[in-house]
Length: 118
View 1 (tube, rainbow, N blue to C red):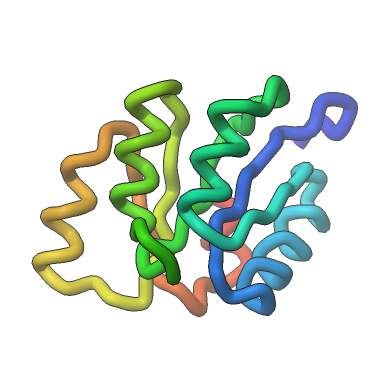
View 2 (view 1 turned 135 degrees about the vertical axis):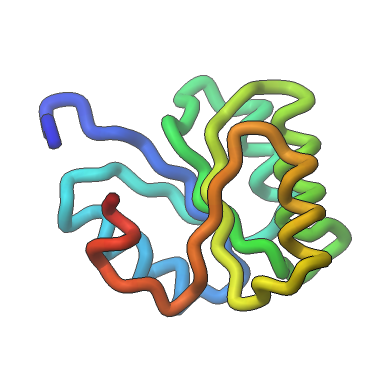
């Protein structure tokens, strides 16, 4: 990766430990990360921040009023960002709900470092 212009990744994860692990892995590979812990924070950051992320890494099951999928819908209503969902729940219901968000992909939590980077 060209570290002269590092890609910016917004991590939306309510578990501070999981968020820090993901940030540490991504930072090691030259990515610039920013962490928020709720959907509400993510919406505010993306809508109000002039430094837009290149990717949003979004937990699906967030604490608070809105989950990760609804957060993604709100964000994409205002700005079009690629979103990579993190989930430990790959149920059919969750998979169908994720399809309602454009520009999405997902990885299962407890992901290997090399899967996250690719």
